Length: 290
Image (tube, rainbow, N blue to C red; front, side, top):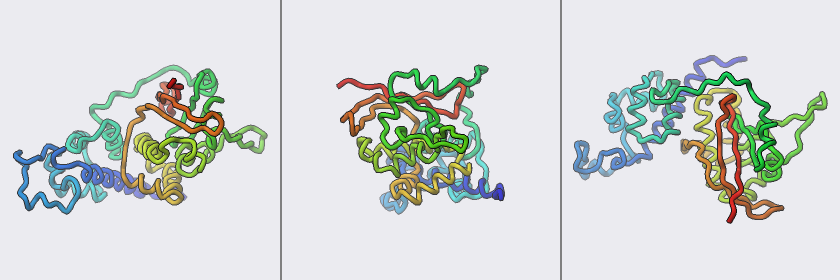
């Protein structure tokens, strides 16, 4: 039976409130421009804060809204914020571009400063054929972090993730199962990932923060919710990092591995959004010479 629609709306409002509260508590008064000597400078007694970061009243003042109204948003109440108000809150909280995009996605509003999505009349391409043509490890993922295409170099590199043999359906065709091909499940649940990935915990934190940025508009989807609930139950690290509300864009950078056959490997990760399939991310790992 389909759940009533208000459950999804409640979940989205709660996620928005949790995110705003986490960002508020992370930001110091000095970082927000409320340092001593300014119009909002505080007395010695006021400096003895019981709340980390900014107070709700301070964020409300910086955002040009009432403290009561802002408190209702953090509490997940049924109030709606306009795009201009969200833009002021994003500026007040010093949100990064990825965090700002996530804020608007949770609120179900379009960022007035966001670029229009690129339109393309080109038909979808054979993604697997394209990935196979790339001469370094490459794979494409959907918004759940499930690999939809990968080449043989990626299968060789990612022990325990992309090297597994695909299952066969009743018709005898190969299937690439979601569970065995999902990056988050691999990183947080597969012991092989801890051995392969240098700085595993730091990298796991980054992978999750990137996933949150990509999935912000889809947190009420049943598949997304089910995966989050599963990983929270099975991985204490995932649960802790998810509650930390970190949001990061996919910026690429250096990736290092300790491969069981090839030893130490260093790559430069490069990511792309596909014009014909904006729901997919193409990732390439270009080898770097020492």
